Length: 328
Image (cartoon, rainbow, N blue to C red; front, side, top):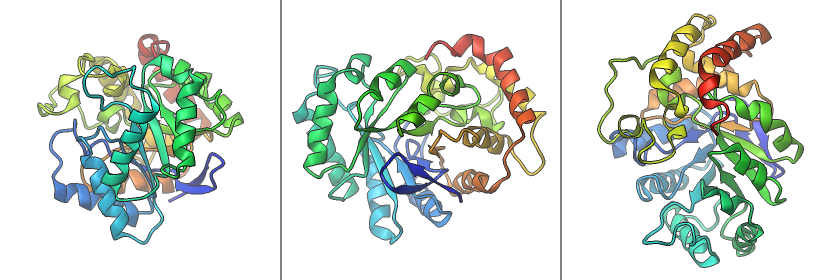
């Protein structure tokens, strides 16, 4: 496993982390046993960066991470999110100190710790990113010792650009993959100038970029790839990266022709992201130990050539870019 710095926090984090959405909800059923086993496999494989949210399974994902923290002597970095578990009519008016701190307190209980390494605003309405009051509230929670640092998770690049204007924002989490290349063109270099860490989520486009999904694939009823393909439940950009399913499969067929020796398509997709030095960590999810192992192994593979990068990008330009590039 290779490691990278994370903003100016002095952290040395695994370039492949673990996204823990899958062990919370929205990806079919993941048993308690499988959730605990894949987390342990991640630590054993050198992964030390874990991304979760209080929203994932109403705290289920955080609680599994809390068990992991207690069971290991390894230093692991846990980042969670807040701001999506509103009750009643508080959203988005509820972005106030009282509610923000209540969310943090809930996560501290779930995780069983006294201070969270990094807390991210969980894709709030765009207006929230540009208000200095938002970050003043987070600063107060830092001062109280409940969180060590904070960042934001975004759907739109415009929201990321707004957030990095505030000096204490340490990270931006966004969708970045072969099918969502706009951040490389319009944002990554600016974030690096400000020493803001980049957390790349959705690196495999909800599994499309593993090459194991086809037209006949059936997803469980409680899998967002079944019920959110049209964005009815939440932003469609987090389901297949917002790519039209049939066009995505066509692009995958083209990408398969480019896979180097000793690589899988998932390896190629993850390595494509890691070739961007501005990215600090990639957070593929997993539903079992073998997926964790395969994702972690990508870190040890050789870099891919400039020529191969160009061919990959050409497929994006031809088949995917017209539909998604300017949407987010």
